[in-house]
Amino acid sequence: MITISLNGAEHTIKSSPETPLLYVLRDELGLNGAKYGCGLGQCGACTVIVDGKAILSCVTPVMLVASRSVITLEGLGAAENPSAIQRAFIAEQAAQCGYCISGMIMRAKALLDRSPSPSDADIRAELEPHLCRCGTHMRILRAIRRAALDPKTPNSARATQ
Image (cartoon, rainbow, N blue to C red; front, side, top):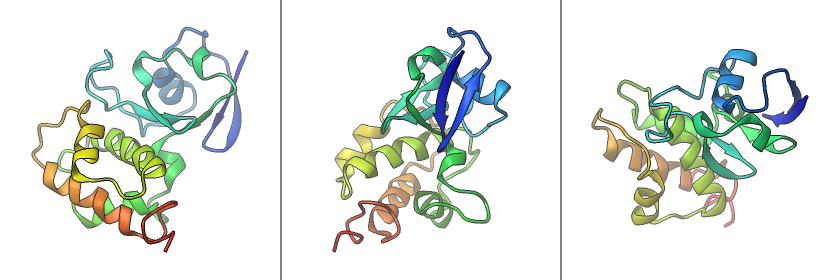
């Protein structure tokens, strides 16, 4: 049996150790924030944060996250109490179809946690692995800049002033 720390709670996993983390999250634990996009680690829709780093859960066997801290979109906030990054994406209307947005939010969260005032080049480089054809790219950039200035974002530029 594998145990993971998921959104701050310990979970014992029944799935085979080789099962992709995405399937465990969605099928065994009922968390649907991470999306199945390409299943090949090429689109980013399945991105979650493991020990502070954004990873692609569709190509990561659950055995590789045993005893590590996994954060999914559900771990950031809820509809009635969204996190700063979620509020920023809502305020900027950064989602169109919304399919890739959960992955982008997770990657943006990981970026802001390690770099509270990222440049546009930093943001673009961080989001480069994500595929989005909706055309809201400028709104996504504004949302991340907005979250970086939100004093409720841990390590944000304003939180440290």
